[in-house]
Length: 169
Image (cartoon, rainbow, N blue to C red; front, top):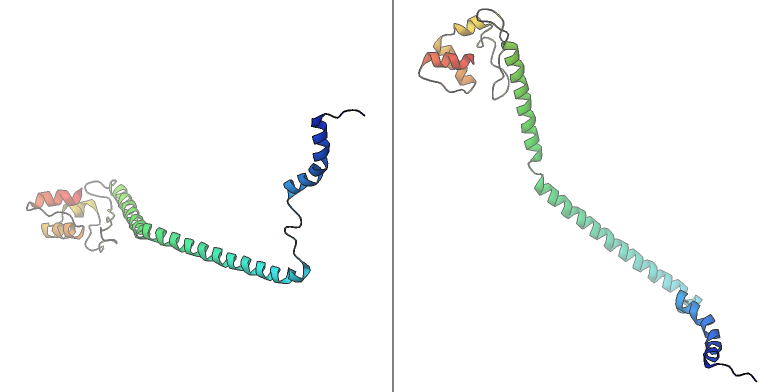
C-alpha cells in the first residue's frame, strides 16, 4: 500500500470539518438564533416593547437637543431684530437726507425751492417753519434760525452769523 504523507493525512482528516465549520464561522450558527414556536409570540412582544422604548428615548433625546439648540440661538440672537430695525430706520433716514440735500443743491441764492431735511427723530418739520426757498432761508431772523437748530438737534452758538451758516450747511 502506498504511504500517505502526514500533510495529506491531516488535510484529509480536516477537510470534512472545513466543509461544515467554515460556513459556521462565516454566517454563524443558524440554531443559535432559533426560537421555538411556543416562545415566538412572547419574544416578538418583548422585542417590539424594546424597540418602542428605544424609539421613545431617541425622540426624547432629539427633542431635548432641539430645545437646547433653540435656547442657545435665542440667547445669541436676542437683539438682532432690534438692531436690524434700527439699521433699517437709519438707512431710510440717510436716504431721505441724501435726497433732500441733492434736491437743495440746485437752489441758487435767491430762487429755487428748498426741500426740508428729515428730522433726526423722524418725520419732517412743519411746512410753515421750514423756508420755502433759498431767499427765505437767507432772510430768516435769528430766533427762527435758533428754532430750526433746536428742531434738528444741532448746536446753537452765541453768534447769530455762525448759527445762520450752520443752518445753511
